[in-house]
Amino acid sequence: MTAAAPAPTPTPTPSPTSSLLASDAYRRLPRWSTWAFASGSLVVAFLVLLVAGGGLPGVAGVVALGAALFVLSSGVTSRVVEGPRRAADRLATTLVTGAFLLALIPLVSLLLLVVTRGAGAFSWTFLTTDMLGIFGDMSEGGIQHAIVGTLLITAAAAAISVPVGLLTAIYLVEYGRGPLARGITFLVDVMTGIPSIVAGLFAFALFTLLLGPAFRAGIMGAVALALLMTPVVIRSVEEMLRLVPNELREAAYALGVPKWLTIIKVVLRTAVAGIVTGVMLSVARVIGETAPLLLTVGMVTRVNWDLFDGRMATLPVFAYRQYESGGAGIDRAWAAALTLILIVMILNLVARLISRWFAPRGAR
Picture 1: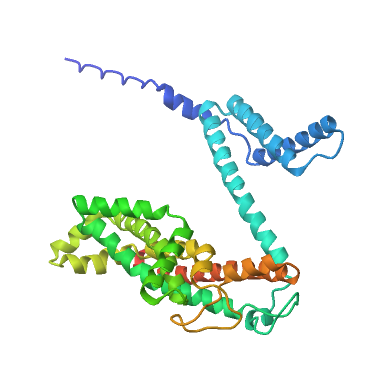
Picture 2 (picture 1 turned 180 degrees about the vertical axis):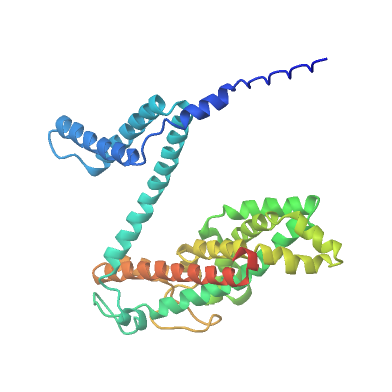
């Protein structure tokens, strides 16, 4: 008796999706095609505007028309050569990259403007002298008193707002339930949108009622800035704490660690990089405020190291006063703006180093 022959193995029928993927793998535009489309679109846009306008076209018009031509030409070519799937991907990549470059335009232009206008008066002498004894339209004088006042008032505002914001965010994420938590969230949302002049008026009214209308001190400006910093700290820290996986908390609870120690050792330690970033965002939010400091601390021409006695100079108010005076004061105003940008940049670098140092080893 002979054995039956084995049945032939059926050949699998390729699905439409696998056939499309296999065919698309051999139909790809070269890597240099993007640059070719971009340069060609700019050249065509320049020639079209040159012929249509009768003169040399502007940079903005060439870039705008070139971008439209680039999207159209690259999209049509990609759809013909690569297929609709890769054409859609190329279109999305082009739109995202274009949006990023568009957002960079005001930032880069602002930085270039401040650097070019402020570099002329920027020097070591400008940073280490004050305006005591400087009258009229004179090129002498510096911003030492304004730098000291800005750093002291901002540090005092951070000392007030960061603990309050951090503890409030911990309560909302780890403990807050019911109407109290919803009420706090609502108040934080309202405080996020208050104008800076309102914070200045609040601090001015508070200290006027407590210490009299003649009282002026740096602590008044610190309180006004703390009102603006606190909701930013709460919102940023709250979002960072919510990103910490619950598995980390549950693992700590399983080992018998109490909740307060879990928050300190696990939750905060995991989210420290985001917390520091949020604090720096709040500092950058208030360090350039002018209106509340005009109402509360005013302006002086010498260095004042005492936050609780006398007026203090700050960089935003100094820049405003100098620009208002005209003449050589305009150059000092731009140099003060450049100094403020450099201070924010240095503070951000220090914050990154701190977050990197205290972050868990696996996140470094």
